[in-house]
Length: 230
Image (cartoon, rainbow, N blue to C red; front, side, top):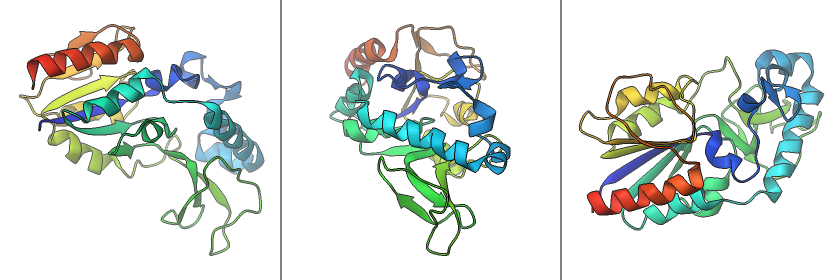
């Protein structure tokens, strides 16, 4: 069974109604993204940051996986699929994908501000000032903010390096280090990119473009992969 590695971004979740700050000039649901997605913003106004992510969790509760999420799950019938996602929602898991690696954290988790290894599943619940880890430190969203290290990037690079087929869905490939994962794709592995917009590839290599939104694009990808690689 061939190994299919898929890198997903906000474009795949947009069809489930989850908005992305990159489409609104640096605003994310009317918040300045640097105020709610940076260590500096957290230091300035913890209450606002917690409120923002509490709102995102409530929004996520009502969102459902879309055709693209479900299509990736269906590909597990024919391929060994690993999803590496830049998204912080859990829609891949809710669609049934078994191997999902979150580069930028997970909205349904909280972690200690002082002991980052202390991570807690909170589902769609809220985090408030005064909520602490078992060692007494304030909890924060388990999200990788701008300027913070991406702990999962080495594991992601290793997964990409093992790919027989690599696909990119709904990401602009401008956010590093995620965009740099293309450097680890084996030279003989075909690369597919699903996006309705023109996307500049940061490395020179052949790429097969499917210029559709994620839901329609996954149908085309399924057809190609099953015809050419099974």
